[in-house]
Image (cartoon, rainbow, N blue to C red; front, top):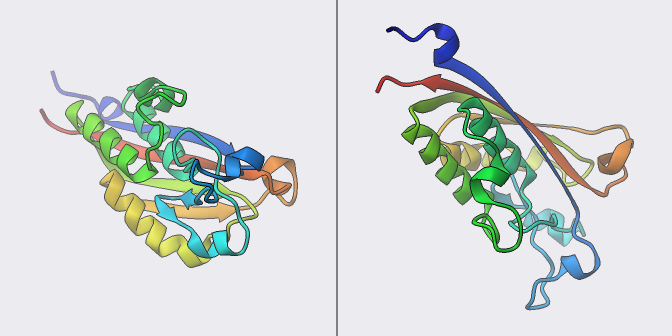
Length: 180
């Protein structure tokens, strides 16, 4: 039986949001400030100007997490919480977004899926995305095994992202069934 085009191409969507680390969240056990990881890269210059890292059991990378959910949903493999677990003792705890994306990409391939492309939109006032866009797209694309576009927008000072309390991300991914 031949696979129909509707079964061969699927779109997945993902969303994630994390607050900026505050008070006890801002420091690691060594006393260092929490690093700002976003779109699979560390944003050192934004850290230097006072933008805190994102709270979470992993590195808090909302761009990677949203993309992971988009990939998993396109392939019918659940969501990031189901895949990695939740909490400080989960399989995702302490991990960076790039390694998580690589693992999800391998799992999707093992289930007969490849990806044509993905888009991730960051919703935030800070950090400033433009100067890091090219590097972030390159690293995310490499980790996910597909071309990834990165966009950014604000909410015109509405909601928690507009108030500068955190960052949100929305992602879509186009999966294609590969011959097995």
